[in-house]
Image (cartoon, rainbow, N blue to C red; front, side, top):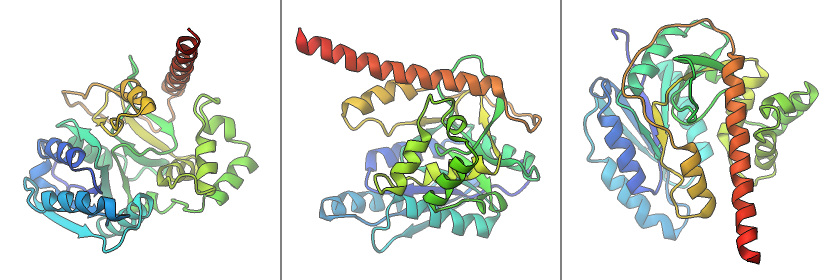
Length: 299
């Protein structure tokens, strides 16, 4: 890797344990010492979070292992979505490319290598919106493959590709309906992305990720995925029933080797079907869990 490496941008808030695990894994990456790390720390939303945010900020100011570390602390709470949208826009326009992580994403030691290699390989491919590091626990996927849209668990992009991001959820939904794309966006109704977008419009969630996904989808752009995951999401561990279920369903083994070669820029419909089937299996797992609870209740 001789070309200039992409900056890593990490968004943190009030989860010290998650932040520590994320950074410790990142420090072990092959290219960490040659990479710039920019950390965005949002301010506390309320009094209950003041101490937690302070502990995270105390921790990140003492980290090392990177070529350069920049910490940008918000003076007031702006929320995760605004923090990511504003932070990504600023950094990617400054550097031309970017690698993005949140504070609950543990990476393989080859994560940065995969991201940087792919950023170089597909830089001039107009259809490629982004590179993604996480893949669901699905067997027999190719080494890498493309799927329409964009994603959010450890990803990378370029300034000209991020420029397609549309923050207006209603405008996105109107275009989805106009082009009759609801079923396709929802992986043949196996995962309800359009409901997530509707909830964002109504203020029920503040997801930047659903807007990024739909923005790329509407432009008929695709994202590169690995066949084995370079990222593990550790954010589903707050003790709730549904989060425990998600922890099991989304848990994947981190890839322990690195191999990369450029492939043709076309959506892989076989891999897309496998992801659809995975989404259906998740839905069935939740249904079976609810059925089991009802049966046990009446017993």
